[in-house]
Amino acid sequence: MRKNISSGSPLEPKIGFSRAVRVDQHVSVAGTAPIPQEGGAAPEGCYAQTKLCFEISRTALEAAGASLEDVIRTRIMLTDINSWEEAARAHGEVFSDIRPVCTFVEVSRFIDPAWVVETEVDAVVT
Image (cartoon, rainbow, N blue to C red; front, side, top):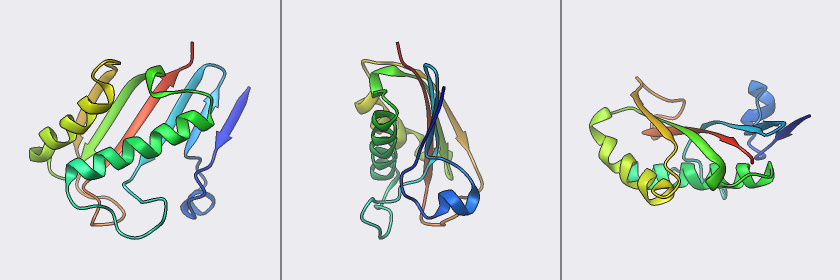
């Protein structure tokens, strides 16, 4: 069983991707940028952007029949690895009790230069 989850982003059909995909018990959420639902610019700062990314991911997980508690892996991509502690603080606020495996990596840039972070999450619904 496969279920594609859309967030309504105009980039999804253009690029050919889904915000999330559920296959059986597994849910993967695509690289999630800090794009506010109402449009407009990303919030300022790595912490605020990371919190928004996880909120977008939470919405996608719920649309797939999963929750943050089902998350087993997170990936945090940063344009400046020196800001890892801000991203880690946001991650800890969301996942401190869940404690998925987590990877931080530095990347050269994102599509929008205002974005300083993107996240990915993988979940298994039990």
